[in-house]
Image 1 (tube, helix red, strand yellow):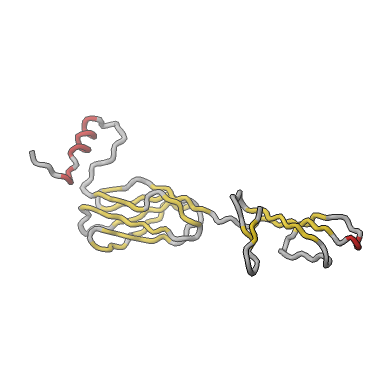
Image 2 (cartoon, one colour):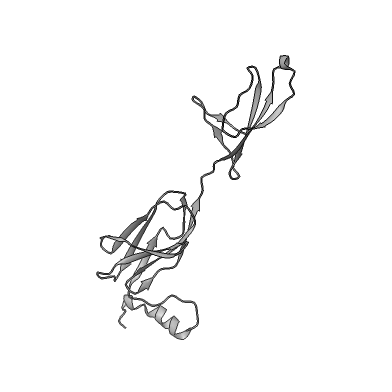
Length: 178
């Protein structure tokens, strides 16, 4: 018996014997997509590469889910059935899939990892004894805190999301926060 790999006889037979099964279509074009589903730091570009077999002179396109629908980006051919493209910095989770020839890839999820930030700053001030002022808790709105000389200040930093740890890095040696 003669085997014709591009014909995908096992998949073709499975689709014929189980027509209602959730099986991928039999196509002459084969697409291998990297990175597939992935995590990307917020604002960083997403680079997608595709290896396409039996594509001929056809284009390979990336379909990206936008808030107002799907946007289509044509990937650049890099030679030998390879294609690549870069999406500018993403600011929210996205979905994408690739089309080329008669093939459509799976749909992949891109999770955008947000960078934690400083959501708030509080200061607990213990004033010098000669002032006879009570200890006070202050919200620091603009990052500035004016207190009399000799005061002891305990700062509490509030992150925009839960953190495993943080470091305060004034000029010189970083200070470990607890």
